Image 1 (tube, protein in one colour):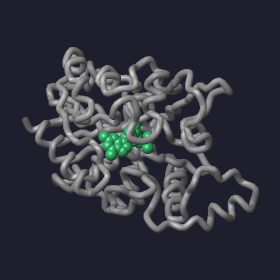
Image 2 (cartoon, helix red, strand yellow; image 1 turned 180 degrees about the vertical axis):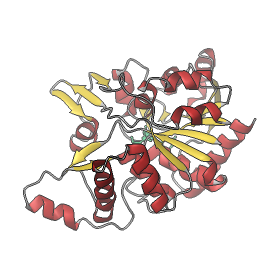
Image 3 (cartoon, rainbow, N blue to C red; image 1 turned 30 degrees about the vertical axis):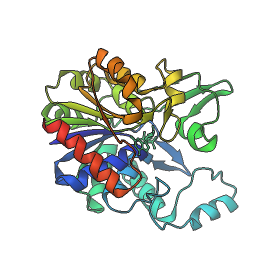
Length: 308
Ligand code: GDP
């Protein structure tokens, strides 16, 4: 059994490759829920949805979110009715959020709802939220504190970032199955996800970091950074705000206590000695996943490393 830690877009690309290279039922995916938010009264879990849609073959890989070919009729009507519609929600996507919200209102935990949704969509990998409790990533900017979606989508990650915090994390527990999955894993893969706002919230749930530090299984990561910038999105900006270098060395520092191997871009070879000095073995590769072939190749390389 392989355990994968992930956010949304970057993680989904690698997971698509992994699920094609091995039996998908051998994957347990632990997902960030710090980006979850309520829109129009509906509970939206963007990273869980991106991973579920990807594994169901439904994802819109061009946009990196949502369902391929989805329409936005309901959102347009919501806008006409005076609602704030800066967060895009497609018509089919809304069906997911309506179902999730209904089941949560009936008393099911997020983990049980996630399990129900993935089974309905015939996804064979197990998808676990990091926690059943609400942990909300908050981004402090000079104009005040924003939720992750307000920062990322509404403000297009333009504001200066002072700091990031995860209220609720200290009192939270890992969702059922998370610690067992890590404890029993043959290998653990840290996706090329944002180290601060995708993997950071997962590590902030009490017990998860310790379980990763204690495992005897190999832990392999893929860098989301090339040079001083993220391949997409604001990871570099958030890393600096959290006190890390905006570089692959900073990524290695985020994970050094539990990471054995880090796949880095060929362009970052000059950083290899600094990564090694942190106790992490760097392996240079082409870490960009622009095509399906890239996803399969990189997933194959990660699997070869964990099987070593
Ligand atoms: P989010 O919830 O959408 O932010 O999901 P992630 O954290 O999983 O994805 C964002 C991260 O993926 C960013 O830090 C990107 O740099 C990284 N990323 C996006 N595309 C690629 C890619 O093709 N290769 C690698 N290595 N990283 C990528």
